[in-house]
Image (cartoon, rainbow, N blue to C red; front, side, top):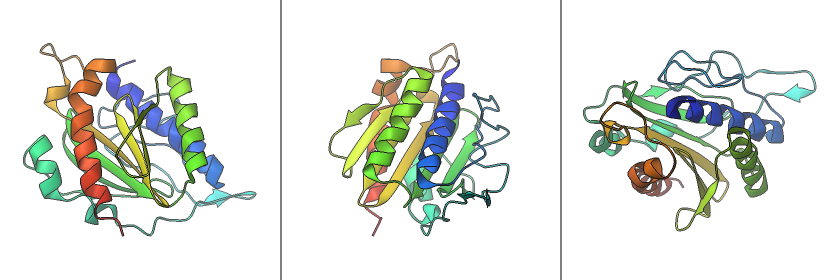
Amino acid sequence: MTWTRSVAALVGIVLAAGLAACGGDDDGVRSPTGTPGPGVTVTGPATTSGSSSGTAGNPAPPESDIDACSLLLPEDVEPLIGATPEPADEPIGPLATCSYWASAASFVQFQVCRCLSADEMAQSLEVGATALGVEAKELAGIGDRAYWLEGILWAQAGDVTINLWISRPAYFAADGTALGGEELEVAALPDAEALAQTVLGRIE
């Protein structure tokens, strides 16, 4: 499984687990690579293909009351991926989502919601990490709690949960192969930590 495919799958699994904990459901995420992971609908960056209206006995999760693109600004993203296109702002379940997509290998996706307790977040990340055989590494100094899962930084501050997924050419080897594991962590985690601190600093 390639890095971008595994990240897309991980986002989908964690979202499914988290939304189940919230009493809602989501029908998938999309990856900028167009490469599906298990149970993931994929055709483009950071969008969902269906409704989150819920079903009988499984009510829809509440829509986010947070404007993701007011927290992640073009000037935050430009140092990472260069000149930025207009942001894509489309919710995925209860998660407000803001994405800046320059190419399949150069993008930033940010998601935020008030939808998970600390326990629900920890359980959701454990499910996602176990399903894909990766480690949920706990991080210090970012919000109240934060975790790194093979390319995605998840954090909570108060009742707000965020995740950040960054891709840039620096995260690929000379032959075009995406970095993974410790190599990806060394290359990508500092960028994700800095951006997370910026975003969390704007949340009231």
